[in-house]
Amino acid sequence: MSKNWFVVRVQSGREGTVRESLERRAKAQGLDQIVGKIVVPSERVSEIRGGQKRVRERKIYPGYIMVEIETSDDGAIPNDAWFLVRETPGIGDFLGTRDVPSPMSAKEVEKVLGEAERREEAPKLQIGFTEDQRVRIKEGPFENFEGVIESVSSTRGVVKVVVTIFGRPTVVELEYWQVEQL
Image 1 (cartoon, rainbow, N blue to C red):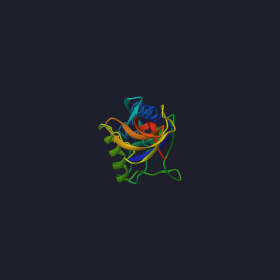
Image 2: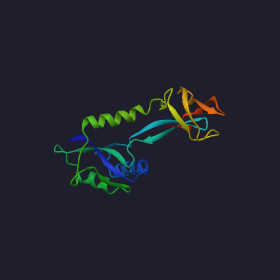
Image 3: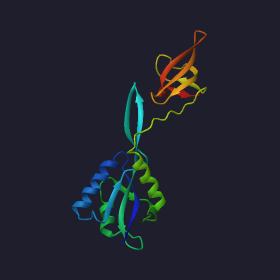
């Protein structure tokens, strides 16, 4: 007997509730030793909207969860665990070929679980702009103006853009999400 990880299709947007339902059902049927950890791969994303910094969870693979199941030596899933997973509301099917679930490789498991562990760290704000890049302002009083980025402040989530107003270059400070690359 060994533990393998499998990917299961679930209803998109219901990954968390399906995970909780599967955990409850496994415990109620006494299969929580066979069906181990259940993971919804996600990461923490930091956003700045209206001057407020917010951190939210973003699913890395929407519509999928990972389930650790104790399998026989030949990799077969026990029937009671198979039916438990398949009959849980919201679950579609295991990923695999020709109705045979394919276990994840150790490298894949390490990569996905590593991403899930990194989400516990403080999220970092990433601004995809550089100095001297041409941009268009897409929101605010200078909407549809074009300009060049003078500086980027990733700690504050703002960019300074030089726009031409009435024939004169003027520096405008905007939040990074208010501009788009040309």
